[in-house]
Image (cartoon, rainbow over all chains, first blue to last red; front, side):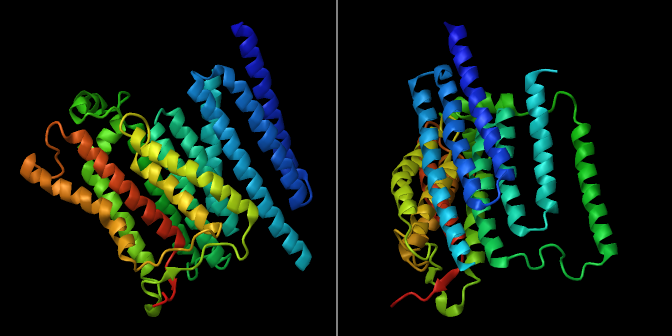
Length: 97
Length: 314
C-alpha cells in the first residue's frame, strides 16, 4: 500500500515538474507577452496542482494537507490576477502602437 | 554523491549566479527582478540550513518588502545612469574592486579558519529557554537574550520612515503620499484584494502568535499585514492615509515605545535594562510582540508608499 502511494506521489510530482519545465521553455521561446502568459498559466495551474496532489498523501496530518491545498488556491488567485493585469498592460501598449 | 548534496550544490550555484546577475545586469528592472528571485532562493537555502525563522524573514522582508521598494525606486529612477556612476575614473574603479575583493577574501579566510566544531551558544540558549516560557529558541534570543537588537531594529524602521518623509515638499508635510492605486479600478485586482485581505490578516496574526512556540514572529507577521494593506490600497479600495494623523503616528511609535517602557521598567523590577521579572517573561514578550507587529506593519506600508505628495484638505 505504501509503495502504491509513493508511486502515485512520484508520478504526480514528475508530471508537475514536466509542466513547470514546459512552462519555462515556452516562456523563453514564445514570441509575445500574451502567448508567454498562456504558457505560464499552464505551469501554475497544472504544474503546482500536480505537485500538491502528489504531496497530499505524504502530508503528516489533515491540517498540513489543507495548508497544501490553500497554497495552491492562493497561488491560483494571485497568478490569475497577475495574468489579467499584465495582459491589460500588453493590450494597451499594443493599441498605442 | 547523495541526492541532497546535488540539491544543495545546485542551490549554491544558482544563488551565486543570481547574485552575479543582479550586480552585472545593465537594466535596472531586470536587476530588481533578479534580486527578488535571489531573495526567494536564499530563503530556500535557509530552510536547507534548518533556519526556518530566518527563511520566513528573508522571503517576507528581504525579498518581498525590499523587492516592492526597489521596484518603486526603479520605476522612478529608470535606467538613467544606473550602469555607470558619473565621475568614476578607471583607476578609482580598480581601487574599489580591489577593496571589495580584499573584504571578500578577509571574510573567506575568517570562515575557513573557524574550528571544525564552531563555537556556539546554542546549548546554553536552549538550556535557559524554559525560564522565558517560550517554545521557540529564536524568539527567545530575539526578545529575551538579545532584546536590545530587536528594539533597535524596530527603531531603525521609524528612523528610515522619517528619512523618506523628509523628502516631502514643505506644503505637503503631513499630507497623503501619492495614491498607490491604478489609474482605473480593475475588477480582478479588487476581487483578489477582497479574497486575500481576510486570509492575510489571519495568516499574519497566526505568524505572530505562533512565533512564541514555532517559527514566526513580529517581523514576519507584520510584513504580511503590510502586504495586505498595500494590496487593498493598490486595488483602490482605500486611499493612502494622511501622514499627519495622530492615530497613525501613535501606532507607528507605539511598539518601540512600549518595548522601551517595559525595558526601562526592567531596571526597577528585575534589576537590569530589558530584563523581565520572573514568571512574567512570556506575557510581557507577547504584549511587546503584538504592539511591535502593529508598528512594523504600519512602518513597512508607509515606507512602500513613500513621501507625502498631496496637500491634506483642511
